[in-house]
Length: 251
Image (tube, rainbow, N blue to C red; front, side, top):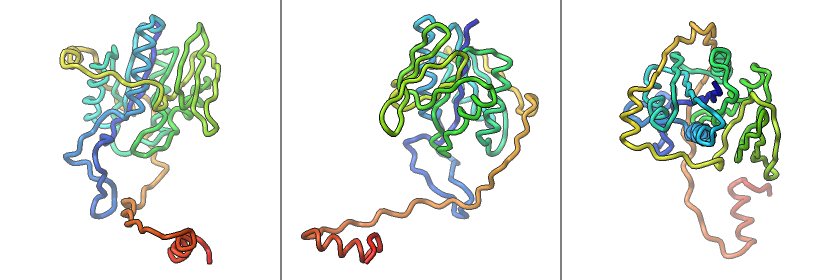
């Protein structure tokens, strides 16, 4: 069966204003809305469109994290995914751990394509897809804004600093989705009800033979500085003086 594996991450909803804990040990998540990472929603939408074109037969979504991740997996099933895999893990899951867990799922499910979001909006690491491709020893095409599958190859237009770049990679491959790839579909109530009957399998991270080793230690969280009120200047000369007074320009 021609399968696509889509990795998703549970993050604080992008509409929520982030607040730092009083002791600066992290961000406040109690009572905060959590959602599917927006880039991962785009990745799933692309997989659904590929299936609708008859190129794929089954779409599997996978997430690595605490039991609450199942809520986001159900959302993905409501969007149209066929099955969900929940790799249960507690605490911080670093990109390398996530990549190793996804590799174990790939070895089990044998997908011809893996699609992830280009990055999570919480840590902004943009590393999991690249690490997964390296561990899997398969081609990668990151920051995709257009994906065309042609036989055993994928033609991917990706966004780079200089504009757009087009790559052709052999399948199986890893693709990471950028913002302009598509617009995810709206989930309707009947689809949410149907999603409750779709299979969702849970497996412990340790059962996959992956060690949840933490290589980074987060020391302190700080909110961004408050934006200062702007001032009006009469001319360029006054602007230069104001910039020097703020230390932005050297005297």
